[in-house]
Length: 371
Image 1 (cartoon, rainbow, N blue to C red):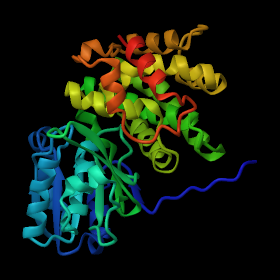
Image 2 (image 1 turned 90 degrees about the vertical axis):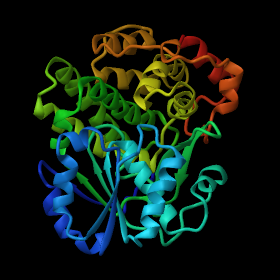
Image 3 (image 1 turned 180 degrees about the vertical axis):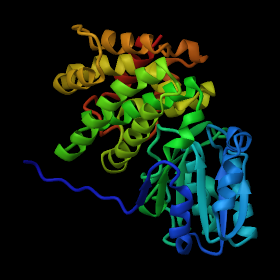
């Protein structure tokens, strides 16, 4: 059996209505003054934010203006609140955007370097980055375990990551009940992201026996639970399973990483102002097709676990599954006007995780096949 390394410094709490208990137990990590970074919106309307505030025993500050694709300008505002009040920790409350923004805020509060420089120059978070407590309210990103924060600069037209061990949350509190009220379209898109994390870490050149075990478990859960939620959005058992799948695959995102579709979605999302999940869905049939050429065994296993129809063409298999969930789309539908050459210039990050390696051909193939 091959050797491998796997790690996670994050203490995890998982369970329905576990937040109050977890926050009380971790009050020393939270410290005297904490800043909640959140998207607000439905979390305010449903009373979740007010409830969370009541659970926190320290002096409390709140920033509620994080957008679904967090921009450095928003993060600067959150950092300013943190610095002005000398906060001792940052809580990310919401989907992946809120948690990533909280991570970036924790970096910025501890540093005199402008946050955009971390994004542009690849600077590692400082050793005194504030403790981060992640409380996800969607089942999708696994951001509560990862050592990266994906943020954007609309001014510079980039979407990339601030990465390093110090940005890994100290505490993750996964309470599936927060997901019970998430609308169907968001549930489907974030659920697909769970699958994408599992599929890409399964196909990655860095995958190992342990990570593939987690991928297979997560893909099987998505294949069963997401169609159940499509039929009945109030299926709480399926919600809990999706939260679990999202959580366990976060270990793979941290240790193995993602492949080409995630790298492609970042610039695509910036240009089209569309969600992470929507971009991945548009890119996936083409990636699956060409990944199968170099990695047929693993791709076919993924599609079998997902419960796709039997067909020789893997892109037909995944597209049929997307159609049944009514989330099939292509790049044109996202409003993309980029040429393949322009998109090629915007591909960010390291592509070495993927067995596909010719960047120009990859961009051309995915752009053309996703039309």
